[in-house]
Length: 448
Image (cartoon, rainbow, N blue to C red; front, side, top):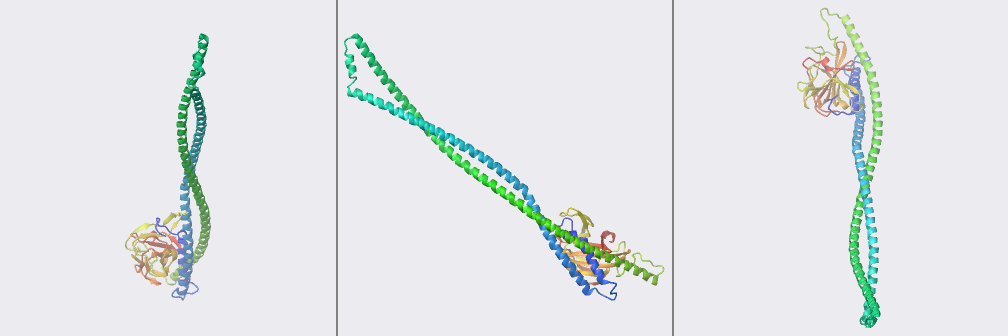
């Protein structure tokens, strides 16, 4: 009903043809019903049918808006899922790496603590050995002091016998050697003790550093696991939302299709009425021609029950606007939600809002008012042309200048706009043959 690049509510696009046929059928029935040939104006019957059509269209628009919203929400959620899955995968990888780092830091801390414990034991042992050596040296020094020198050794040295002297001298050497070795060992033990103390200090510093590293690694691992948990929760929430939205979309789609089926059934019923009326009109025109033959004159258009509908120039209809360009022709379009091809039932003229709109040919206005998804709409019955009942519709008008009755070709009937299911100023112009949509180019003047 609008340009291909416009976003219309889904159901309005689906039943574009059905609603227009419904409008024309309702108007024709009330204008010239066979059971009431004396009626000069559709009057209350026309308005009653129009109200019924408006009610159906409004309900359909609500359904379409809900379906469109459900579809967009579902697509939006689906578009977020890949990023959520990627975030979860990255979070899990980061958590695994953080756990591995935390485990390595913990292991390094345990090794450092084990080394520190061993060094502590070695230091305690060395300290005990040094203490023992010091004790021996102290005892030895005390003995010498108490004996004022070597004591008995002095006596030994005073011996006059050579052998005795040699024996006692060897004893003195032995004592001195023991003393020297004891002092050397004590010195070595002291040096070792100092080294062990330094080593233990280094190991303690390493343990402190390892402990800090392990604590930091644990903190990072905890944060990474929390991030992974959140990412998983986000993904689960999105998945649950998708399930819910998918179910809502399916429910709305089923309701929309049910509404479409009922509208198609009504359109088919009214189309039969239109076809019957067109056949009756053709029979009436033939009967009139037999009663009142006009030699030398033909009726290339098959007669017109409404007057003013005869062809001029190369086409029956004139261009409904005098400016603008054709932005979308009559033809099939691909439906973005149902994923099937459907008919774009008219011709779109790209004009500014407020552009004058004129009757494409003379005829009877059978509907002029709000048309739901069509916005402000006018439907004109042009009577029989080329053997078919011809009607034209003018949609999305900003205002309407006629309310009913007969209009002449080129008469101002309203102004273009963007009412109804329209996202931009334009005129959506349609032609119908016996209630069926037809390409307007078939009926328009060549230059239209």
